[in-house]
Image (cartoon, rainbow, N blue to C red):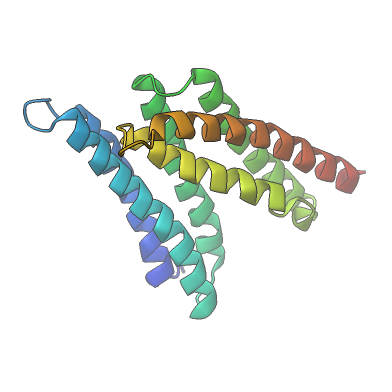
Length: 187
């Protein structure tokens, strides 16, 4: 039987936010200006990112971890990030290469983890510090790129672009790390 608790509810909420997040950019300009779309999408994405941290913290704190939650949480994260990257490509705020690298890595590492778990070596490809830094860079870059408008002298597009390219580089490095760990564990 599937467990239903507050951490899983937050994860489902993150999944439900995806069509809302994407839909913001389909409103007519006379109904919602580009600036309002940018701000609304940034807020939705940021709330989703916070719920990602919060659901894990609550699951551990309330001792409500479950196999289903462990499965659903990374799926929700990957779907939200992939949706954001695709929207950013469509808005011409990032290069498609960045989106392909990040999304491709997520698919490859998910498949790798599944395969490693299938041969009883799932712990061999646990999340690394490099992967956490990559995630932090992308979770800071994406809201900056979504917001897009300058804030005084601060240019979120400029800094977000640098951070997303750094995240893409870290994505490749962390993928290499995971592949090396899997290679060593699979021998």
